[in-house]
Image (cartoon, rainbow, N blue to C red; front, side):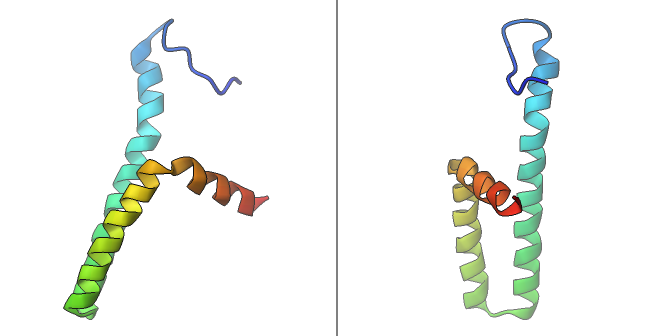
Amino acid sequence: MSNTADFTQGSILKKLCRFMLPVLGALILQAAYGAVDLLVVGRFGSTSGLSAVTALSAFLALEMSAFPSLVFKSASAAET
């Protein structure tokens, strides 16, 4: 099976959905992780801990969106 998708031929909606669903799933999981992290620190931590988690969550979201290939390549290299 080829790893490339030709968006110039055939049904673009099916190919676009196959591209979009993993990205959407990753965004939802990242948002859920941040929300749970904030809930736990807000319940058991201090206000300075809550502000630190908020700042780090924004940095983590930026890192995952700006450098996804670095994150996934290092994770796959650790598995082998």
